[in-house]
Each structure stands twice: as structure tokens, then as C-alpha cells.
Length: 198
Image (cartoon, rainbow, N blue to C red; front, side, top):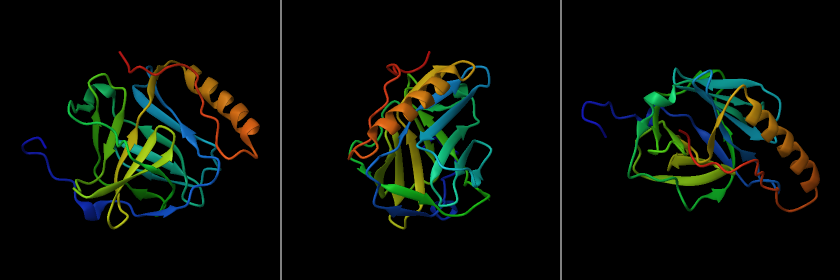
């Protein structure tokens, strides 16, 4: 932790509920919108928007059941803190994560990334003891022992302009989801390789 930086308090964080995941595991992808200098992270399949959790750095859109629909990072990537000796969790069990609290403020958020900006971590608390879960492909959630939100990892990010890449990804996701109904596993979407951002 950088000298002088306030430790993020565990008690400030958002409480969640962990449930057994559905057969069709959701997918997500991070799209950095160059014109807006912000990161959009859609989750598919997505329900109907009901409420949000928000902070000056990021916002979460959630449905009536507390499922994550969309994540928006307002902070430009030039302000993301580079962590050279940090990697996303490797061992993370799939889970259906439900966020509690509607129209609430997210706690103070720290934004960390790799040197090539291929992943991003939103840190909500500096708890040393956490468990990792896969909410969707390329979206990891770390929770404290008390089921409080510690961090969110977006592990696939690509640069996008005029939201064209995001639109193509959503279209392909819908096609794959329609084909996978009745199967035991969701078909992973591959629009193009994600190799970080320039």
C-alpha cells in the first residue's frame, strides 16, 4: 500500500449473498470506450435494470434479484494504479452472486491494473482473508469471511470505439445463448483475442 493512502475499511463494503450457479454460466467482457475514457463491462445473459450501486469511480447496475447486469468504471485508464506483482485469482468456483442494497453508494474504491492494462481490479476493502468466486467468465468476485465485497476483477479488456465491439459481442452472446439452451454449459464467446490495451 502506498504511503499515506487510507486503508479501505471492511465495514464500509457491500454485503452479498452467494448461491449455487445456474447451469448456463454468464459471460462478460470489458470494453474500454476510447471516446469516453471509461470502461464498460456488460454481463450476459442480463435481466431488466432495477437499481444501482454507485461511487465516483465506478457503478454497478443490478436487477430486482440483485444480479449484476453492467459495470461502468468512470475513472480514465491513465489514473489506474499499476500493480506489477499482482494477478487475478486462479482458483475461483462459479457462483451466483446477489448484491444487497439498492441505490446505495459503493465504498471508497481503489482501481488497480496490470502494466499492459489487460485486467482491472476494483478494490473495496483491504481484507487479508478473502474467498474468490467466478460470477461470470472473465469476472471474479472476492469476498471477506463475512460475505462483504472485497474486490471485483475484470480479466478480459479490449479497446473499443463507438461501442462497435461491445455491440458485436452482445449479438454473438445472444446467438450462443440461444444455441446453448438445454445444454449443461454456456458457450464461451470469442469475438477476438484480448491482448491488453495500448
